[in-house]
Length: 260
Image (cartoon, rainbow, N blue to C red; front, side, top):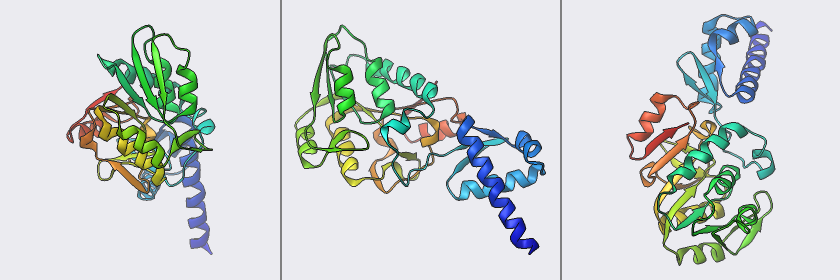
């Protein structure tokens, strides 16, 4: 009876920790111990369990949430999650444009923010599978939009399948801004849907330079379909909520890691 009750209490406590981490972006061991009325070592044990389950990534003195990559959230949901962080990341990613004249902008909310941050008034061709991004840029001064054809997925409003990849394969693109559901040093960039994975992989093959932009919650998450290794990236743009030590580990695999 006591053992079952303790196990149930631990589960409830761990659920509260995950909820707090997702609500605030990170949690602190000392603060959690006070809030939950348990010893710091109990909190550390909970964090170890949650990390083993892929829900949190531990840091010195706390932890931050790992975005669940086993299922795909809708575009509308992503537009309500970590928005200030994603806006900072998007602005920093757009600054990497350099002298690129042709750009691929991936589907997703952070790429949509990158599209909004692209400079106006200079000649730029943007290739995208995303209907919302095409709509955002359609009337932008100096920007020519090329929307990839294919089957439109309802959750993300982006095109996929062989029509999309075949069209994309015909281009040589200066720079690709890529998103992912998960990024890890062990498994690279991943996404749940094979059709989406094919589009992302083709975009990287077609591009001279590739930049991944994503919130700190993407790091350590792993989905079903791998479409790129970390070494295929020129740069990773994320926020300072990704610990510096972890960012350094990614940089050792090749890309420049920019934290904003």
